[in-house]
Amino acid sequence: MAPETPSPIDDALAPLPAGRLHWLKSGKLEVALAPEAGGRIAQIRYDGVDWLVNEEEGGAAAIAWGCYPMVPWGGRIRHGRFDFDGRPYELPTNFGGHAIHGVGFTRPWQMDSLEAGTATLSLKLPEDVYWPFGGTATQIVRLRPDGLELHLAVQADRHTMPAVLGWHPWFRKPDQLTFAPDAMYPQDGEGIATVPCVAPTPGPWDDCFINHTEVALVSAGQRLRMQANTNHWVVYDAAAHATCVEPQTGPPDAFTLLPNQLEPRERLELAFELTWDRDALSR
Image 1: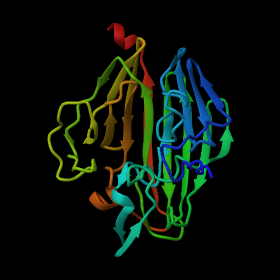
Image 2: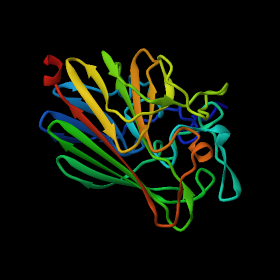
Image 3: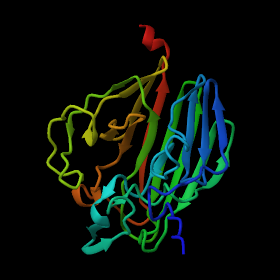
């Protein structure tokens, strides 16, 4: 008997098709939403230039294309294990023996509202072996002629819960990355972030940083400037075809390294702003 095709819920490298796309537009900016594929952005197009690795370029693996929300954690949880509120927990592992990027990027989101340049999506988080705490995640995608505003939030329901939020864009390999972090989390032999933080090392990177300044990419004569209401950023630029610039509210393995607790009905929010500036390249 042939083995079953792995599910992206259980294997982050399993294929996750985009499904139906919903296009938003404002001026020169176009954004394709794929709510069935983890509520992700399938493509960001500015003035005819596609900025994201698409489903085919990413090999269709759930973890490897588009720009997806990470909720209720970002990065790896070591072996899926953590302690919270005096109790041990163990989540299913889905990537290299660890639990990665939350439960939102492989599950279909509900499209709550859709207009020409704005959309609102939501996801009821599970209350089972994959995530025992429940909660509700929401995201707002809002376009303006020269920029994209992404807002991600998670709200606890009746249970106190840990939480970290993040966005994971897979940008097509840029011509230039401008990034000047203050510090970085060193990795151990398992590739997991540890403390205390140290001075940043030269790239290429697959690391989490403390950063307080704007991050920028240059590609096809366009400059993309990024900022967020957090000082934690993961940058992965070791791949030949892509660079990931990921704002997060905490580091990988944050439930152990930098715990953040939400009381019932409490919310955690992350705002991520992307702005295109063609004129800046000629100055």
